Structure formats: structure tokens, C-alpha cells
Image (tube, rainbow, N blue to C red; front, side, top):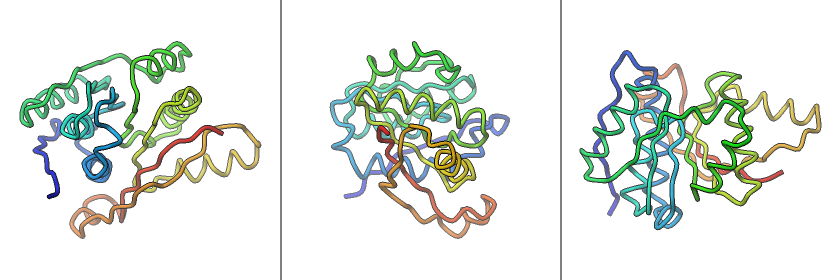
Length: 199
């Protein structure tokens, strides 16, 4: 039987209210693949309302941390953890500042990192790429959700041109969005989940 969770989005004043479409796909992936999360320490990076982290907790993760710099997002994550009767730790530390020690901390504290929809601009996308590349080099599992934004295609082209040794992506799931979700989200038609691998 397919598992479902209850989610309250962050307040409309928060950016996270606008990224629900990809959370649907990434969260569905987590619930559809519990063996990847069961007994592991999971970081929900840029967690927004905490949907991915809550799903990981429901899938049997040993520990889950929802990480976001937006206080409204963390408040929503706390509500959603309570609504689903799971424990989720909250962290407001900015792990995307480019500090090499952040990669070491993430690598030592977490077995799996989920990034639901963080490729919305070049600065944040580059920071996520840097963290992911360092993290998977240490053997971690890094899953990235994206609805097909420009950043991935541009990064792939830039890598080919520069011959830079950055992490590679493998699409592990594609979820078609409902017609109403497609209309509400500027023509995005699907949510993709990628696993990041070392170069």
C-alpha cells in the first residue's frame, strides 16, 4: 500500500510556498524507496516545509534534520513533523556559504542528503553543486529534486566546455505532474529526482 503524509505548506510570505511542485516528486521518491532511508541519518537541505524530511522519517530514517535559513520554513517543518507523528530536528545553519568545513560536517553527520528544489538561481545552484560534489566524494548519497530548471542544462554545458571535474547526475525518477499543477507552475510538466555521483 502506498504511504501518504500530511503536509501544511509554509506561510505564503515564505519562498517555500512556491516550490511545492518539486517537493511532491522528491517526497514521493522517498516514500517509494524506503530502503534507501531506513536506519540512516538524513539531512533535508533547504527543507522548506520539511516534506522530504518527514517522508524520510516515515520511511524509517534513524534521524532526520530539516535545514533551512528561513524561520517560517522551519516553523512549518516542525508543524509537519508533529502532524505526521515523527521526530525531525531543526537547523538554521547556512550550509551553502562555501565553507569547506560544512562539507566535512555534513559528511560526518549524515548518510543521505535530500535537496528538494534548490537550483532556482545560479548562486544557490553553484553552492549546492559544490556541497554535493564534496559530499559524494566522501561516499554519501545525495539526492536532488528539480522540475527541469535551466541551471542543470547550463551547468552540464559549462562542464563540457571547461572540462571541469564536477559531480555527475543520474536521473533515478520522473514523476508527471497533474494538469492543475502544470498550470499553476509555469509550464513545468514533471518533477525529476537525480542522484549525484562523484566525477
